Each structure stands twice: as C-alpha cells, then as structure tokens.
Image (tube, rainbow, N blue to C red):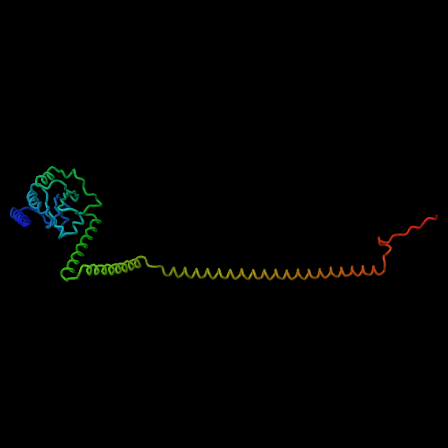
Length: 291
C-alpha cells in the first residue's frame, strides 16, 4: 500500500511538471515572497500519510493558480524546521492563506473545489486573521524560528554521534551537558564584560567615599576622647570637693568634741566645790517662830 502511494505521488508530481503547474517550493531562504500578493501555502512532510494523500489534490489546485490570480506553494518542514516554528505548525498538513502579509489558517475540507471556492468567493474574509504578536513576520516569531533551527541542529548532531560514531545515548547526553555548562560559563563572562564596558565601576568615587568615612570615624574617635577627658576632669573636681567637705566635717567634729570636754570639766568642778546657792537643789531654810 505504501509503495502504491509513493508511485501515485511521483506520477502526480511528474504530471504537474509536464503540464506546467506553478507550484512554488518555499524554504528558509525565500519564504518572505509570500508577504506580497495572495498565496495558498501548504506545510507538509514526506513521511506524513495525510500529506501524501493531499499532494495530488494540491498539485491539481496549483494548476488553477493563474486563473484565480494567486500563487500556490508548499514547504517541507523536515528541511525547513525554522518555518514550522515561525508559523507554529502543530499538525500536518497545515494550510495558510496569505493576503499582503495577513495570515489566515485554512480549516475547511481538503479538496480542489473547496480550495477554489475559498479563494474565488473570498471565504477567507470570514476567517479570523493571525494576531500581530503571533504573525510569522514578527520579531518574536523570528526568535522562535531560531530556537527550532537550533533544536533540529542538536538533533542532527545527536543522531550523528550515536549512529556514525557508535557512542551510546548516555554518552551523547553527557557531552551535551558538558557543552551546556561550558557555553553557559562563556556567556556569563561575556555578559560581565559587556556590563563592565557599558557601566564601569566608579573606583575613584568609592575611594573618596572610603577616605571620607575614615575621616569621619577619626573625628568621632577624637570627640569620644574629649568627652572621656571632660568626664575625668569633672570626676577629679568632684573628688576634691568631697575631700574638702570631709576635712571640714572632721574640724567640726573636733570643735564639738572640745566643747563637750569643756562642759564635762565644768560639771566636775562644780561637783567638787559643792552645790551652789544658785542651784535649784539647794533649799533655803525658814526661821522657826517662837513658841
């Protein structure tokens, strides 16, 4: 069955060439041709059964391109992986209608009459166009296309390592891991270099700031030293006052002690001489009256 399909595909391709069918082959180099004019473009892969079934119909439809005033093309996603990423092709076959750079995805039935009616009756006007942020000609989709190219290149390298050089799969994965680490380190160094080039470090200002901070610290230390000296001076003055007050207190105690001694001496002298007439303890005798 597969051989019959391959034969039919080759026969239809030769038939289209003989009859001068204008089927355009688009790839990574000339895909931007579809940005001008009106196009119907098919994304296919040789291994896809649905694409093989559609190929004769698509070639027959391409023969009507001059009558419809459009251009018909097809893109092989196996040889142009970047375009499959740019157009976000998730299923095969995928058909796009393009009118002056505005993209619309065709979702109708896959037969020649329906293709002709879609273009001739302008049914594409009823289909919502691809938004600007998702447009294949936008910058972000160009970045996505680059990632798809890179992934396909890595896949080819993996296949070459495992099949041609006989390295096991884990060895291939290990090589890719080491390569990723090395590339990441190199990109990091490049990024640091670019940052230093565009935003150099202000070494001079940092030095000046360091000097000023040291000077401020020195001034603070001097202020603290002066405060300590003032406190010591005040404490010394306070000690002197304390000493003076203590000496005065001693003198006062001595004076009071002397007064007390003098008083005791006086009392002793009085006791020896006898009670004085002025003493309250001495009573005056009254004269008796004559009987």
